[in-house]
Length: 186
Image (cartoon, rainbow, N blue to C red; front, side, top):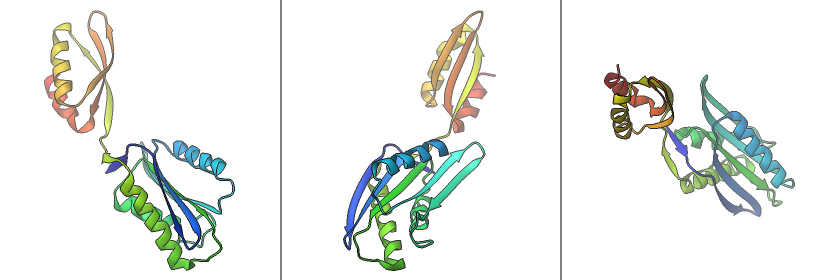
């Protein structure tokens, strides 16, 4: 799976209609809906604001798409299919259309929304998704140097430490490296 690092935008005119494609990272469905609400506020005169998103939640993958008044299956679904095909998660794509007076037909709409989505995905900075875990780890003082060394090797970091009789460490580590860390600190 992959994620988008920063938001970006592309624009294209097709038969006098203006299409603006936007892609943005979002961690929750609420983030995605806030992004879409912002677009509605920024583009109150748009004919259609079509979207799709895929968000990894603790309960599984949340997938939604909306044709926003375009003929069924001609707008939201082509966007969603590109997200799914590229295995993108924690992302929202919206395409804003200002109607230019020339009807594109079902096939034309599907191609237009699909192509603008493909362009905005290609212009985005995409990286592999790494699931991170936050852990509490209680260690003796003489183990701190080893912890710091291992976290550097395993792409982890110390988020917070409380020093008392022992050291309470709050750490963040990629899920796939958890087993290697636990083998050292058992």
